[in-house]
Length: 486
Image (tube, rainbow, N blue to C red):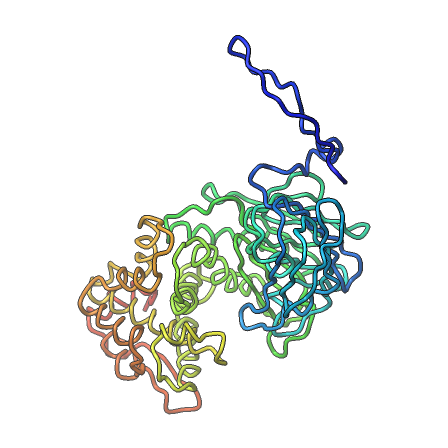
């Protein structure tokens, strides 16, 4: 709707300022909740027209002639192919002559302040189910990173939903189905017909759980185990997350082979998609294991401002720290702890280790497999053992996380440089990081682990990691600090 513009004049008299003219927008008279704020980029309306398409209208407060959409994320390609019927109009409502010049790239002949387009969001594939927006049945996960142009920042957004649907998010609510979004690239919205929400406050941090569907566990039990994990990571990092953290649990909308769940942690949101028919013997235990990994991502890397590719740390080291957390919380036992590490070593041995972890992190999405995860996790294990060995079991890898978060939060710092500097607290640890992180030295755990009272045998069909039968007093101190109780 066109704005009605009247003269604006400011008059000063006796120290008072009188406003004798007004700039009135007719839209503001009826929609104060969605009013433009001075620092907002624009106002967006997302309409779930059908189960396969989302209609988007965006009013932009600064005119533009070009828009780019994300086309690749987490190894998923062609995301922007889902954008179609793109149109742009000028402030006066004239067609701006927009056209597609490449996948996800649109250009207009005239300055435009409004764009309209549609996005196909039908049931995703097994590869992208946790990484892109989708709508299936009575649920949908909407990720603004692939629904809006990449240059959009700080906007208000309103949703038009099917009858009986509602929406949940960690973003700030402005009104009914209306929200303020500061960083669209990390904003996630959970839409559905029957969403249930519960919340708790953990050491001053807000944690929210939103579920859809019927599950063989109580909502309260899932929130409780998530709270335990969050409390552990608050202690680990010494850093309180800003705002509200949200866990969204929905039925997995597509079969993904033998895998029974998929997860993505983006911004302050954890999206967990699970096969309701999965034959987990202990559902809460399984949720706890998943939470130990995904919730740590709320801190690392999501709360860090580092640059560069340090996936070896925020994936590989996170896997190890999550495993340690599961052991500390008694979600798993020490035998399962060792068994998991042995299984990861078998996976690692299936790769040709001919590059450093830093190099592998740079190529993570262009090469298949889990090399960065596997080697990163095993190097974290060795780092933890070495730190415990040098300190007689009093210093651990976990303490390095607090040190990372205690440093000034300067933007633009190279993550590899900072983390390696924090880890390299002694000549021995520095030599370890130089060999296995900065250089492509192959891991030989069979040779390295006996120094810590552990024996690894990889001669059979699968590796076996066990505690040595002949332990010194030093070995016992180290292993007891690790969780060994015999």
